[in-house]
Image (cartoon, rainbow, N blue to C red):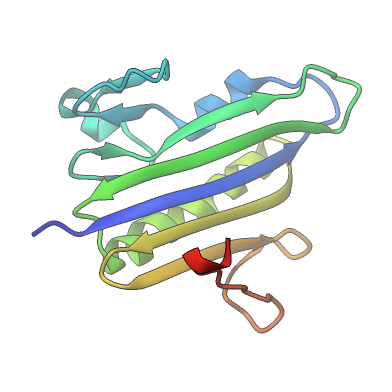
Length: 160
């Protein structure tokens, strides 16, 4: 039986000039899936490009993303990156060995490219019963996993 990990996250990037979403997309890399979705996203054939994928991936494809770029170049908020995916055969060890290091690395790459990481959060819910919530402490650029300074409010379906 397969273990699925469900991914949801967002990264906000600020930039003083030249809000260039192609730079952001080149840092994130190509998305891939065995079956190209009808979402309009530029998804590559996973079976061919597996070794070229920088994004974390399961047995059926990678994390997907969409970049929203602020067209007002005089505004500091530049990009909002939505991250999501359902990664098959991606277990707790995969989260710890692949997803967490990737998240740290991608934030570091944005900073090297002179982008300001304003906010970054990533949730990975492993069907084996563990949920990881990664939050970038942008004051210190550390990745926190459920620290004492973070209040987590668990909502049940009956709460909404």
